[in-house]
Length: 130
Image (cartoon, rainbow, N blue to C red; front, top):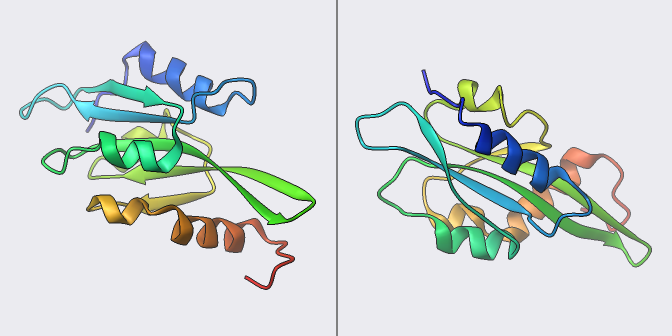
């Protein structure tokens, strides 16, 4: 069971969800290799590309991100993704609202184009045939 009681996690989550905030992702890591306590490792405004750079392949991390994409020239959507690892049920108690889960085992699992395709499919209405 993961300990997600650090209040900075909930604060960062609300910041990423806030439409008026530039913050669009957060990253959680365990305090140490032997700990079940998660801490806020970092946040950012540079989207999935920046989040990918913040990941450390040697750590079991979790991330939450706001992804913006266009279905057509007239509309832009913002959806949220949860990047999961082993204690996902505990993390979902804090990072509650998202459109899809992304099981990222390596940085390339966070390439934006395939994620946007999945978001479009999950979102229902798609006017560009995806």
